Length: 296
Length: 164
Ligand SMILES: Cc1cc2nc3c(=O)[nH]c(=O)nc-3n(C[C@H](O)[C@H](O)[C@H](O)COP(=O)(O)OP(=O)(O)OC[C@H]3O[C@@H](n4cnc5c(N)ncnc54)[C@H](O)[C@@H]3O)c2cc1C
Ligand code: FES
Ligand code: FES
Image (cartoon, rainbow over all chains, first blue to last red; front, side):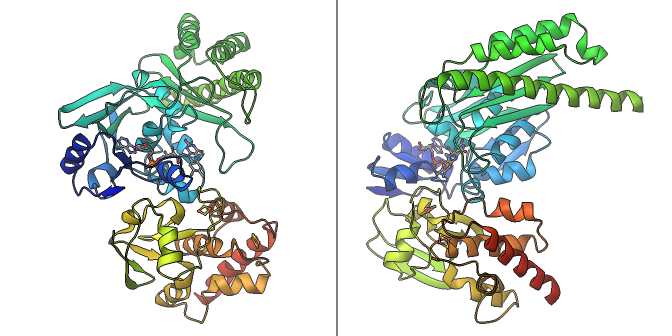
């Protein structure tokens, strides 16, 4: 095995071009488990820890440019206002020790259906900027997950930034597991209200071969909110609408039975958290509206 | 490969390190520092917790080469570290508190808990129970049921407050 330690992004891209099978290692919280247990013996490990760019983030007008290696701890502490869904999801990852090392780039690299960043990214809206010596491109998050633990990266590409839309309304993330710390999700759900476009977006984790959006549920809710004038009148979402939304979210799942839970349980639980997160986000949207109106 | 790093304030060099080796292995098997424990090698138990450039991490999940040129503090260096914070003594206050509160049974989880608790108290000298639980949520103990550990951290925090 060789341990490659590029000091700059350009060096890292060159190394990846020369050794396309090299395994990048950032926080190591997925890679090292595989090496410790002999599940992986790459010929080259490509250490990304010395590349300072990957640990930076920049808050722009419309989106946040998040470095691939920014640890969850930093996201929780510094980006709660801009990326509330991702910050909430980050807080549920593993333990402080893991959150101090692991980040979104590694979560996307592993592309597990259970990765907690994914539902939040799907709900907020995001693009993954990847680069190789051939150039760079932006992959919409909806096209990023291509199969169980597979993503759209080419062999010579590395993830540099994740561009995540800044929250324009309330966001929530909910994860079902057996306890609070150190839990791989039985299922997870992210919801973002986008008052600017009068739309909602969702993200479901651990309930299909890849993280997915519940598109039919989004379309249904968008139409129901529009029809009832809810974005303007700020009335509570009728229970029948919430129930239908929840049912459509369950329907977007394509889960399996495993040690963490049965397919039926997952489908049911996704419906429950979909309804809850809708209630929470809508309640804070109404609250924010009242505050703005009061001030006007 | 060769790895150079600073451990508990002292420059160290480890030779013949295998490229897939963890920092935990280097500390225990190559540098003679068996304080950090190896229980799961998958980040679940926290018994291998050390500080890497000040930040608590599972040393079983840090590749040895990633520690090149960096500063590591292990449980063996806690008393020194406390000394540098002018909380001198043979043991760091948090170590003394674990003994006084009876928070150590088999002791296997203790080094990781001490490193994690010490770092939290440095950051947050007046933690709530919630803060303590959160800071120690990555450390498993199979013996104590955690109550005495909570007592110990509260005791260390109280003594720290008195000393100010
Ligand atoms: C005890 C434990 C508990 C965990 N709990 C959770 C949890 O609750 N929720 C959750 O989502 N995850 C969890 N994980 C998994 C892991 O922590 C996350 O997936 C984390 O985001 C990985 O980030 P990392 O930087 O450590 O990745 P690494 O292990 O360094 O890399 C992961 C993968 O991504 C690739 N990669 C990394 N950076 C790049 C890049 N810039 N470009 C291209 N590829 C790249 C690597 O080659 C590798 O395939 C847990 C892990 C452990 C050990
Ligand atoms: S040995 Fe590292 S976390 Fe258990
Ligand atoms: S004292 Fe035995 S594991 Fe904690």
